[in-house]
View 1 (cartoon, rainbow, N blue to C red):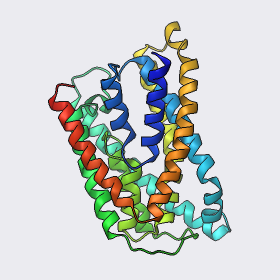
View 2 (view 1 turned 45 degrees about the vertical axis):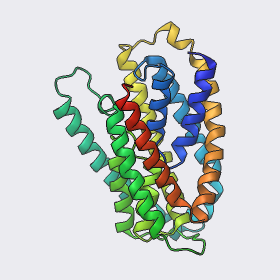
View 3 (view 1 turned 90 degrees about the vertical axis):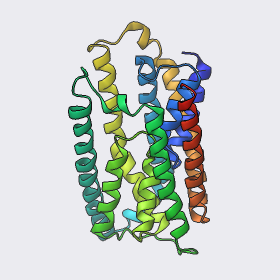
Length: 287
């Protein structure tokens, strides 16, 4: 894999992972346009490293904000911990049931079936992008502005559960932006915009290691437990990709926060709808 392709994928992943536009959709489209195989072991290894880079970007960018929002005192931390646990339980329940149902039912005749094999299809990605685009658009048009900054961590259990349940829907469906869906759900349930953003990305720091572990397990399974020496030679390029994903992620987060604060959230919804149409066109064109 050339360094140019690695850098392009890293920038695409870093920007799209943290903007509400679906990184999986953008990465898969970029891979197909560059003639890459999304299921190839070297591509899976690269994606593991790129996810790591974006996770570090989230921690670096939000750390001080989380300290102000969730760790000012024991009460704030307690409220945050309860909301986090409720959201994660709903995420695991909804996402796990859907994933297991698809893998055990629709893919039951395929050996080593993973739900990602089904949702790499561009027609399904286009549909998911359209759905999340509509959700973001509705939330963006419904948000109340101007809004005073929210520094506290008070979040009703029901709000946290709705965010977690919608996040669970995002797990199996490529193209269904996690950040777009969770922040929009927070806004629609009455959570302040800054708080919805802080909470959404606190969740991603907990979920990303699990996603990385899942991708790593897929890689090991495809290699029958032993990594090919040629694959190991791509680690240096993957580390470079992680660095570019980290830098692109920081830029994306600054962009996201600014547009959210300025009431431009709905523009991401419009973009998702336009991109959904473009992906559908690529599917019709034989990609």
